[in-house]
Length: 213
Ligand code: ADP
Ligand code: TYD
Image 1 (tube, rainbow, N blue to C red):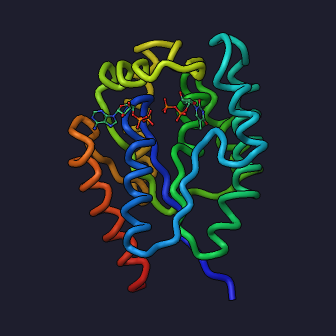
Image 2 (cartoon, rainbow, N blue to C red; image 1 turned 60 degrees about the vertical axis):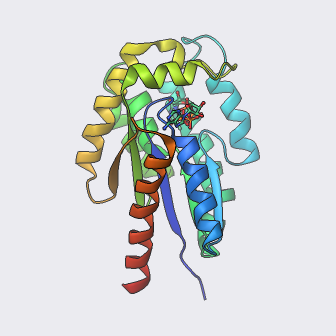
Image 3 (tube, rainbow, N blue to C red; image 1 turned 90 degrees about the horizontal axis):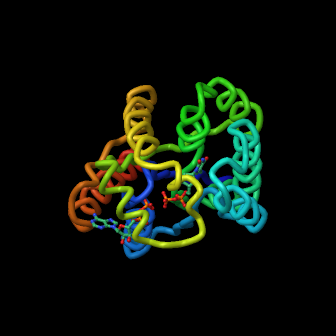
């Protein structure tokens, strides 16, 4: 018998607290007895992690938006085949830090309107959406200063600057409206524990509903 797991994603601008909240949620659900796979994009499988280095390091103009769409989608396909789908087939909860909504935003909006291209390639090669997406909404200036505070080599997108962060925030809010059945918006401009309490409550209620359906 095949079981079906639950696929949860976190989205939001750089520095909004997605990785922190994904980790806290995974810890909470594991402590409650769930089997959880915590993963991220770009990456989440050995091949996709290699592509991650190609897309996140180097000059901001290293790749065109079109080439990026192909690279992020290639990474996602490998991640889906090797990590996400096997875990869901075993009935696990998969928590993913970013997924296709990030491509809809960063590649679909930041350098002209390529959303149609992103969606066509997504339908062709990925063809699935998360069961629930938690959007950590955040003031762009605070997000950027938190992200910059991390100091690493993966700064290609952060190097695009505050205007991009502002555009991405507005874009994510519009996307939440477009896919209102699966999106939940959480106010990220608070301390970690308050944000985490909201996230836990939303997910716990959703999991109870899944069980009772
Ligand atoms: P993202 O994955 O969205 O880029 P992170 O979870 O990596 O964000 O957080 C970015 C930085 O901000 C990290 O140093 C993290 O410890 C810190 N941080 C995360 N959430 C909060 C919060 N609610 N308040 C203050 N700092 C936070
Ligand atoms: P991530 O490691 O989540 O960075 P952060 O923790 O700063 O949010 O993602 C790295 C960058 O990759 C981020 O700036 C957004 C970008 N990105 C895309 O442009 N397209 C995508 O499809 C994904 C998944 C990420």
